[in-house]
Length: 212
Image (tube, rainbow, N blue to C red; front, top):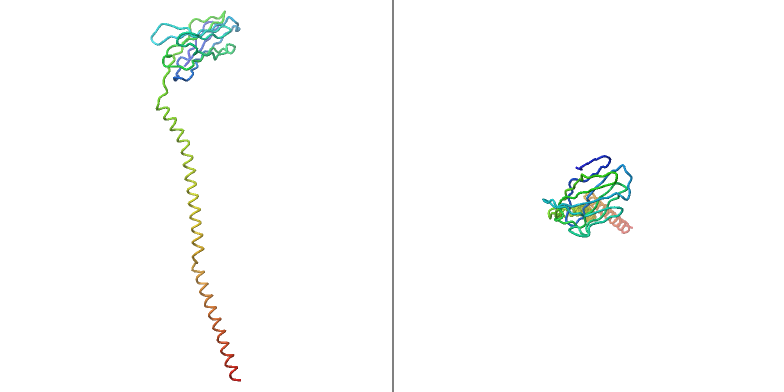
């Protein structure tokens, strides 16, 4: 949820809780609305308070230009990602660590609108768990393996069908059917009858010539 604080005509919103991971830049969002025009008098200040501590540390200041801290824990690790003309006072933490856990506060003043009750954001930085990384790798492997396996099975089935069809054709070509065998037998009988008729005719002609 977001905390909303309104005093007179100035409204500031900031995330109550933000979670991030070690080494991955974290954006701390802060937005504001003011009925007064934006001038060079507008200021933005971000502070940091460690857990279980009342000590605060200034980490960023803005007035016409951004001034990230050059000392302390956040030295050279705060980046301006806001736009005052669009009511954005957000910053980003570069290369965060677990030691950055704590409360970050965003204060905006745009005279004559001045806001003193500052909303805070509780930041929790953790390591990405090995289980999460493993599950991501496993999911990627499944997404790659399953389509490949399906394609492989389809190819094997198709090759099996082609092989079966070829064997069937070869088998039908080398072995004659019963109808073809019957036809061949009838043809052989017809040839024998024809030869026998020719032989008989020759014998009759021979006997006829001997009589004369």
